[in-house]
Amino acid sequence: MPLPERREFLQTAAIGAATLAISPPTSAGDSRKIIVGVIGPGGMGGNHISQLVKRTDVEIAYVCDVDKKRLTDAAKAVEKTSKDVKAVGDMRKVLDDKSVDAVFIATPDHWHSPAAILALDAGKHVYVEKPMSHNIREGRLVADAVKRSGKFLQVGTQSRSGAPVREAMQRMKEGEIGEILVAKAWNSQLRRNQGRVKPSDPPAGLDYENWCGPAPIVPYRSNLLPGNWRWYYNFGCGDIGNDGVHDIDVAVWGLGATTHPSRATCLGGKYFFDDDQEFPDTQYAVFEYPVEEKPGVRKQLIFEQRIWSPYVQEGYENGVALYGTKGMLIIGHSVGWKLYGPRNKLIAEKQGGADLIAHHNNFFDCIRGDAKELNADVMAGHLAATIVHLANIGARTNKVLEFDPKTESITNETEANALVKRKYRDHWGTPKGV
Image (cartoon, rainbow, N blue to C red):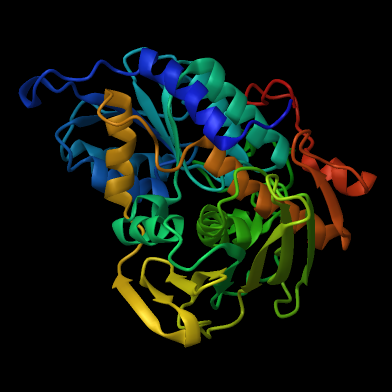
């Protein structure tokens, strides 16, 4: 299916969302509570709960996890403000409850898209953690599900709701540093060695079969959970999809890209760690975007990753540089930004970055009808996640990839194009159309 321009998608989705969203309150006093379920309440899901329980306009009706200990801990956290919370191990119980307006999905990466599609088709609004998809094909299926459902889907790239970052993007839009031709994102930090372990039985209380979900089942290993799944092909997208995607998203935003790149390549591998993790600890990826209204003009996005390096770049551990024809903007993730003009003159700077509460507010405001546009909609999530996937495919195949943004396929390498999708097993969570 052809990829619509992001502005076209917003227009189409807004019509359906405006029709199906919760009716806006007539006054502050009769504002209806939004009933939510939190699927995957450990880790980032726990962070969502810690903020959601403080709100008087939201009620957490369900917490859902396949790990009994995490489920119990989450229920206790919610019970401080709501005694009626239901703790379930199967997300279908949440989705079947018509009183639930929205779900927060903070599962491992391989469940993000399948759970989002199920939720949208069940008539729920969705807040899904990044990366939005585990592969490029899934991202397209989520976008299709948003369009047919008319529901809102917010992706958990909170930088898009941070007031300082939004101000910086507005200054870029107004041409303060000229035309931006190159954007660079980087992820430099010191991760830990995952070790090498042999398969073992899953821990008591973990429903490992449904934790794997639609992904192929592989033998359980003790360095898979909690959180380490992101370093393995079957379940995660590497650190580029974990921390890197935050800055990639800002780089795509700053570059003004409304579609996918047409060319991509990546050199990378395990240069430092000798352990079980499968994704690169070192990556250098380059992407090229044609400028449709200017034949022959191209823009470039670069991503650098070193997860063995405790050294900052441009003053920031994780960040983005936007290079314009009249200046440069450097953004540090959750730290702030500095804007430079000709001769490296510092023109402006501001502290502050991502804002989880503001991201929640924007999501709920859209559901109520008090706001018309999500800060991190499905197309923003799909464009950023596709960069993640193309970089990982490039690193695995060691090829320069020619990518067709309309068909979302790699046209010059059969082996690489096979990785645009993934293999699924026969499971109730497997998305239709994969």
